[in-house]
Length: 69
Image (cartoon, rainbow, N blue to C red; front, side, top):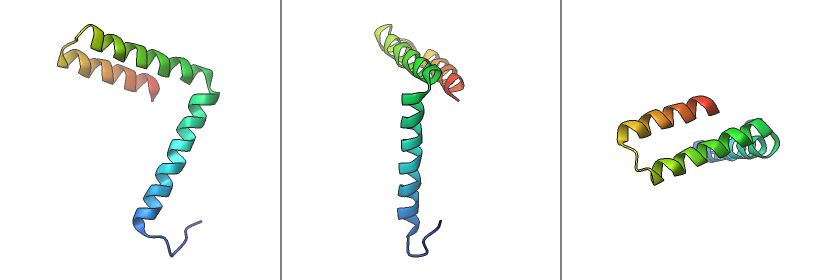
């Protein structure tokens, strides 16, 4: 319920807090998301280790983003 005394900024901060709580809940309860997130982190670490190019980073981020969305 919207509180008329809240400022715009307070409302945005509260919305972000709810979003982060939801994301944390998703990561801690859904096993498929845990696996997908872990593999995304692993692929990103491997990207740094293998020193991939900017174009390869772009495609990697698009692929990881599509999997997580």
